[in-house]
Every structure is written in structure tokens, then in C-alpha cells.
Image 1 (cartoon, rainbow, N blue to C red):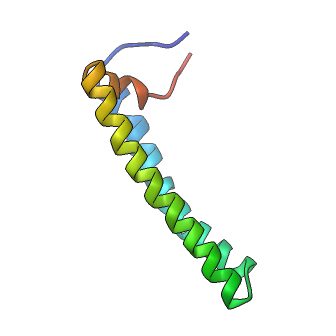
Image 2 (tube, helix red, strand yellow):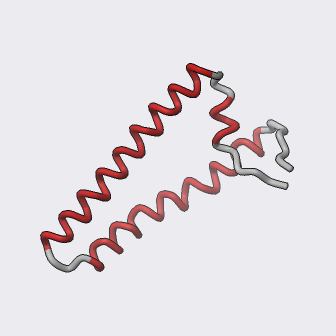
Length: 86
């Protein structure tokens, strides 16, 4: 059962918990690519793919957010980003 009470703690707390770990995962992913791909050509390709996916993810997120707010309402963005709790 998903609780849909909209207090500031229930809206802001999951985001405050997820943001630092998301910020820590980006350098970890890049260092993993750096150690996995030892040849310069493979490493350049891996960094290129990583950058393309990261850029596309940001662009797609903005586009889908715009479609969501245009079609439904801006309040749906709060519902989409929520973590379900029982």
C-alpha cells in the first residue's frame, strides 16, 4: 500500500537521501571504466558511450517531465519521484 500523504518530510526526505549517493556513483562509474578498459582506444569509446548515455538521460528526463506537466499537471512530478512505502 502506498501512502500518499504530502508532508514536506515525505516529499523532500527521499530526494535528500538519494542525491548524495547519486553524486557518489558517477565518479565510481568513471573510475571503473578507467580501470576496466586499459587500452586508450577502448577507454575513449567507453567514456564516449558513458557520456552519451548520461547526456541522453538528462535530455529524455527533461522532455518527459515537460510532457508530464503539459499533459497531466505539475503535481504528477511529485508522484513520479516518490519512493513507495508500506
